Length: 130
Image 1 (cartoon, rainbow, N blue to C red):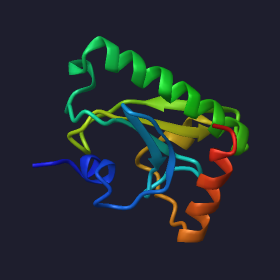
Image 2 (image 1 turned 90 degrees about the vertical axis):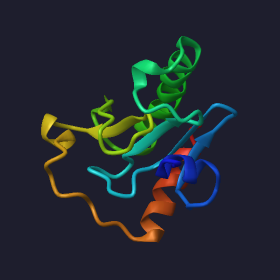
Image 3 (image 1 turned 120 degrees about the horizontal axis):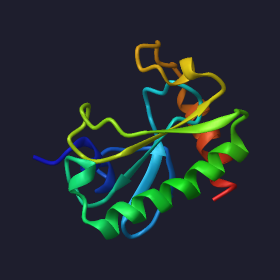
């Protein structure tokens, strides 16, 4: 069964897209810890990030860096944290989360509730720097 990310990649589920190329897609997390919280996903559906072949893994990290640089320019923060957890969706992905303190990346924190307009505005602002 296709993961929710594969359904997003196929266009079956909408997303707030930040960037895309032949191998990867980046879109806003709809349950964000912070404004600008972005997921970077390889289009090839592989559950565990360390099961990706070396070329896709390296490409994922390079693409994530490009997106992180854009987020940092668009969203006021000290840093962009990088997280790879892999239990919530069985499709390898990277979390890029704007942070000012370590508490900003605590997944036990309450998730932000943003409107469609807020998501669209954040995505538009990040895309300016891609």
